[in-house]
Length: 251
Image (cartoon, rainbow, N blue to C red; front, side):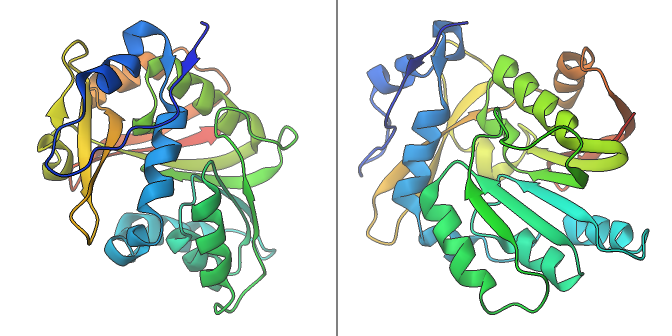
């Protein structure tokens, strides 16, 4: 599919996103929402760490469990690492961490935060989860937390295929997306044409609201869409605190 890139999706107070902005980012129009999402998080910047500093407990538990499987340090990819809250957890557990994020401001924040954490120095770089710049079978484990819900089905499948490609045989992967029942996304504005899309606000300290694109199918529909992916075995699928949480093993 050919995409027309949208370069911004920002709404000032008072709320609502202009309809032309919503329309230009709809999945059905063939528009790629990645640039819009990147622009939103570029504006959010440091405020993200202020509101999202605590690692998810289920991610910490998974990292702890998998850190103990091998005596040697495991190579871990944190895909969509944001400001690095899960990178820092993995560093403390002894992982050799690579973190990627599409947003330069998030990578810069992660670099600064990781300076004060004990553990192997992480490799952090700007990269697209749909086009990961590493060779096949580069990592022992992969986590991708609260990232893929920013992509429509076709780009989400492309991202999943990339995550599988860089995962070594027998390696495991943890993926999570918001469920449409989550209060933080349920309060967002519905898209006029795509029932799976919601525009979720982020409020800055000055009152400005940044609107973010979320593609939020049910867990059943998401897994049905991923059923065509090859090279992975599904280990577990379920809802946890309004998160769709899935684990896989590379074949």
